[in-house]
Structure formats: C-alpha cells, structure tokens
Length: 75
Image (cartoon, rainbow, N blue to C red; front, top):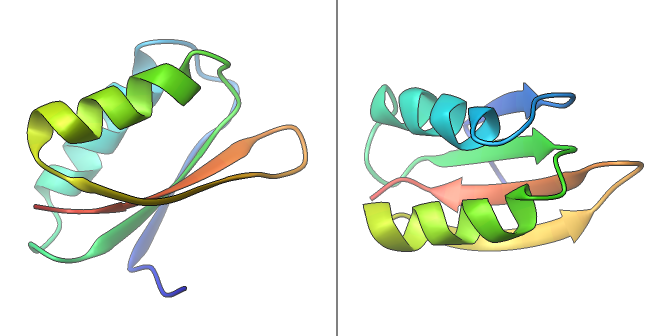
C-alpha cells in the first residue's frame, strides 16, 4: 500500500501518538495517507477512536517488530 508521509511515534505514550498524528494530518492534503508507527499499547484503542471522531479513514493496522503500524487516510 502507498502512503504519503510517515510519523514514527515509537516510545511515545498516550496521548502523544494521536496528538502528533492529528498535527501531521492537519498539514496533509485531503485523501493523502499517513503511516503511523506506535509502540504505545493504548494506541490500539486510541488511533481507531481518533479516526472515527475526526472523520479520517483507518485503512490498515498491522503488528510489526515491537510496534504497530497504522495507515490513516486524511478526511
């Protein structure tokens, strides 16, 4: 899958991965895709909730080496 930008939020704890993703998405064009990398266990709940609330589309979630990767399409 193609993405337009990557945000590595590894090592950051709640709520920082979501706050940084929100800031990064705000500067991106509608329809572009952000690849978010997060190690915070709470991100499993926080990222989907953030996407629903903000109207963004969570395209995919997958487990990586010690982190989860989220692909988010900006509304």
